[in-house]
Amino acid sequence: MGGKSSGARTNAAEVEGESGDVRGHIASCRASHAALVGHLRELTDVDPAAPSRLLGWSIGHVLTHIARNADGHVSMLDGCPQYPHGPEGRTADIERGAVRPWPELVDDVATSAAALERRWATHGDWDGTSRMLSGERPTGQLPLLRQREVEVHRVDLGLGYELGDMPADYVRRDLRLMGMLWTARQPMGMTPLPDAVLRLAPSERLGWMMGRLDLDGVRPAGLF
View (cartoon, helix red, strand yellow):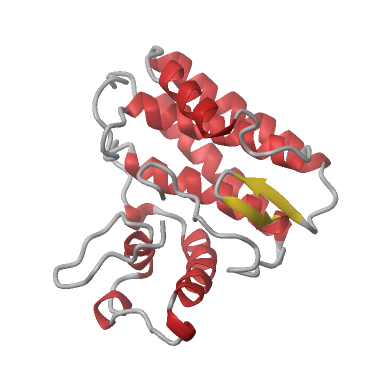
């Protein structure tokens, strides 16, 4: 996750993704969008400047990132890079947006998610690859990768949503993808997950693989 991102530094050759049930992924992510926005609108006393669970990022930083990530997915579906102005532009956008008032931040998350959903509805070709900041990824993976951003960063906000609250269908889908990434990163692809990790509940196992859960005596997954 590169410290603050939940996108893997990989490419299509490292993890050969498949489009699979793209419409199912979209429907699942739409539900995550709705749940996140509904949760945020119920909160009225949040200080956006308060620290999130991500080192160096406030709650405002995380919400702005979620919104700009949606914009980045629209950009990729339009055939452009995820962040046309590169990592520096991405960072600058997040820093500028982080200091906004709570209602403006929540509206940004909601409107950017809605714009992405409208773009999904008009997109027909899910073959090929798209240019994420972290490298080329199969276009058919994008809805799942967007849901990862929404779900994991909702946990990162520290506003009452935990790993165990993530939807089981999302966890199942992303564990499959993360398992492929784990295998691709191991010597000869022969290193299994540690036993302590395999004993975790699925959502916690996914959290460990994403660097959101530490286990005594177990080295971090190091996938991001």
